[in-house]
Amino acid sequence: MNEPTRITLPDQDLPTAWYNVVPDLPQPPPPVLHPGTLEPVGPDDLAPLFPMGLIAQEVTSERWVDIPGPVLDVYRMWRPTPLFRARRLEKALGTPARIYYKYEGVSPAGSHKPNTAVAQAFYNASEGVAKLTTETGAGQWGSALAFACAQFGLDCEVWQVRASWDQKPYRRTMMQVWGATVHPSPSDVTETGRRILAEDPNSPGSLGIAISEAVEVAASDPNTKYALGSVLNHVLMHQTVIGQEALAQLAQVGETPDLLVGCTGGGSNFAGLSFPFLREKLAGRMDPVIRCVEPAACPSLTKGVYRYDFGDTAGMTPLVKMHTLGHDFVPDPIHAGGLRYHGMAPLVSHLYELGLLEAEAIGQVECFEAAVLFARTEGIIPAPEPTHALAAAIREARRCRESGEEKVILTALCGHGHFDLRAYEQYLAGELVDYDYPEEKVRQAMERIPAVPA
Image (cartoon, rainbow, N blue to C red; front, side, top):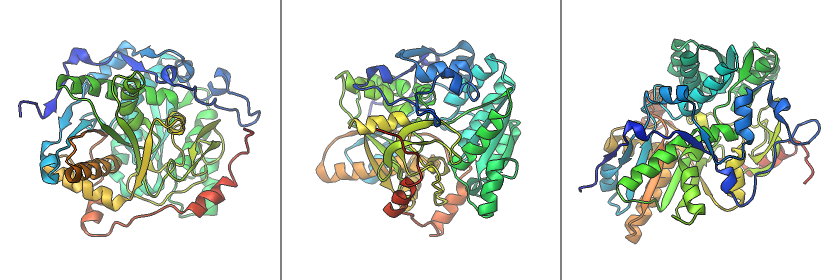
């Protein structure tokens, strides 16, 4: 019991560079393609949506990218974040496993999302951009970008998926407090939104639809750019401050993980925790099992196909090769709004195809059961998204109880659930139900994605 429960790093140990996993992979990932020519996109193709500083990071072959001083200055508001040993949870489970969680809910927005939001706002502001548009599912990304834009004097316009707009009104208020303009998606302020509302006035929306709306507005204004909270390489790279800190914190107590689990929707939280550990695994310095955990209602890795597809519903984005359920996928309104995306990050998809990652899908009832046990033992109410990783960690800890194995399990608690209490209210009342995405819907969706020659 000499080992601490809360493991911290001195402020001066805040990472000063982001880690790019691509140079360390056995095979490079497939290129991003122009939807018209099917040729690899160049910087000019991306310039209408992103500043050149981020475009350069998207395609960089450098292993390390220095974090600018102004970004570090904002990071220091909450970073380094703590790593906890979940001793009370371990005791409740009666397991010999040792469970650690990296807690990102201490950021101003209450999640891991500011790690990239601050960086994206900085690079846009540095190039004279006046406004950023974006989408948000659960509201964590939208609130993070609103916070970041306030730090660098940018306007912010957000399209929040309608299901989350209805479920999580205080996320919307949070964005507005930081100065953002927020619309429910589909909305009547874009051509994409009006078309979808004409087809289905009661559409619950999707991240793909919200992306289309945000991209449409950004592409029509030279002073406006678009910001994405997950999926793209530079976004995943910005999040690697999480895993770098966790490596150092575990080293303090002489531990290496046997299993690393992370929730996956677009892939940024998972990548942020896992990529630095994957670097160590590829170098032969440790050998953890690395497992993605996704919702059974939105199983892009476990049921989707690995194909080129659009990142948005309207087909306005470049084509990326990823595990996809089809770009016009509209998910069931589960409470993990941040995981309701039709595709998985191309880099995460590529690693899965290389056999470097595992994946499993879990229903939301089991996830909330895990969340309540975690809250009653560890004291933190998790956001719905990381409950998937907690459920997977608890599954493994129970297996260890049966087998007697003393595994070290690491996960990321990527945000708190203080604005998600409606979901807990429904769980406690026995009103939550599981959704299982049918294979037939995947087959039908594949008929509508672009045909790209092998």
